[in-house]
Length: 253
Image (cartoon, rainbow, N blue to C red; front, side, top):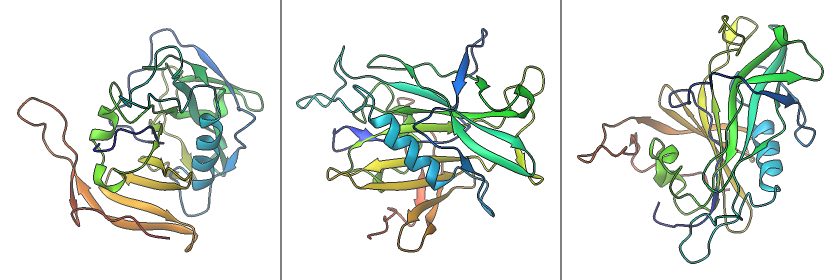
């Protein structure tokens, strides 16, 4: 990114999710600061209310937005990444989105859990679908997360957090995707980019290539265009996707 400022970024996706650890550490849920969100009618991707609530809660944690003012890099001992597991509970006719209590990492990374113990539902009604973490400074080491996004769409923004969705329920030997009324949860990446004045932009990037932005004025998601991945450069570094239109333009509200 051209502006090396701290950036809150919430990302949801399945293509680059790390494999679950061999020894499953069970995360505790739900996390009280993030209310459960009922699956919205007609939209089976991650809902705007959960994106807003998770971003608010994660960025209030100690060190979650700390970034060096000169080099715009995480500060050892002060900057802190946190990971929460994203999951849904219930059955095909009634699902709700939840997140677990976050685990604390360091200035470089945090480790999510892919197994959840929920206070209200048995394991048979818990589907682990992803994880969320705050993204420090918009810089390495986790800036590769952003290389798969059309970066021009949020280049001048500050603060980040990240979410990824994984199409599995996390049950040992039974990786059945979560479904709502016979429709599987729609895998999409999502970003929350925060401006210097504290206002935020919410984006979703689907596996079909479509990029959407949340519009408060229209109370819904608005398509900005479509993007396709590109091969790495000559040094095998990831490149942002090719988009149409190029560049993508955010809504101005």
